[in-house]
Length: 386
Image 1 (tube, rainbow, N blue to C red):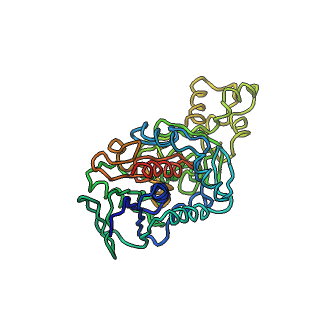
Image 2: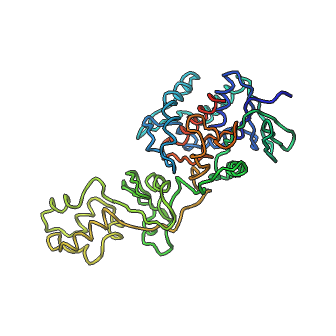
Image 3: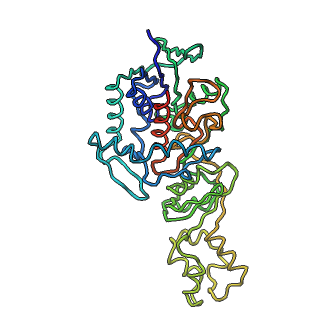
């Protein structure tokens, strides 16, 4: 059988998009996946509604050891590209807070549209087959559980180990290592933090409030949720992308209301806990204010006591014990080192014809549609270049 022009390993967002783009250019393309159905992770994204992109698409929304790597792909593939794809197929979508775009009905609409677009362009699917070996001779030779496939080019779009319950593994990283690529250690990202057993914050389970959370030198202001295991909500999930184990995170519980302003407006007579309690939940107020200072009148505070309160409220430091791990992580941080990948084509600088796209690379998008957009954009780059 004549070799394929492109063999795509992984029937996720980046793999399906790359296959569709390449096939539309007249390339013979096949998609291989150990799962029986394509797009399994897309189907559960965004609570089943698929947050497929964001109107605010800038490089600073991505975490990567090589921060300039994402610029080329996202400059050439704007949010309007995926919007146009949906509009052309009558798939309705809606805009939510912070420019996040979701399907109105179901993520299944996008997966079905991608599958149909691939099939109409002649893409062959090898689903439900286990990959046992990938070799590079003159072409790439892939040994499956039932047959062998040969192609001139190979795209590794196998994602990372986050969400193993939908079939995610580290196989893409292992293939990259096989071909001599360095791997930035995989870590859970967009995942809740856990706190030590004796943490007083665990007694605050159920409280949610807007807060500014700083981790790894980067800050985000979003809702923060206290849980029985630690910290969750958008602020915590965003912070986990930049956090490294053992580091402290800083929380500003009143990002929009400096205590300088609150205390000045109080007149000085009310107690500290009364002033702060008007802006924060009672249980949280008790947990973060030192008991000796909580009952003091504002006017009685010394400069040192005032500074202590500012730190407790606006720069509260806490060191998470960890995260809830890969099973609860929405994406994988780390991955194939991007310094060894072309930012324009996603081709390996070590092996001609070998490409990487999507989550398998060391590119992690923030919460809000950025990871799926990276999948489309990097897949587009591959599909245009093979």
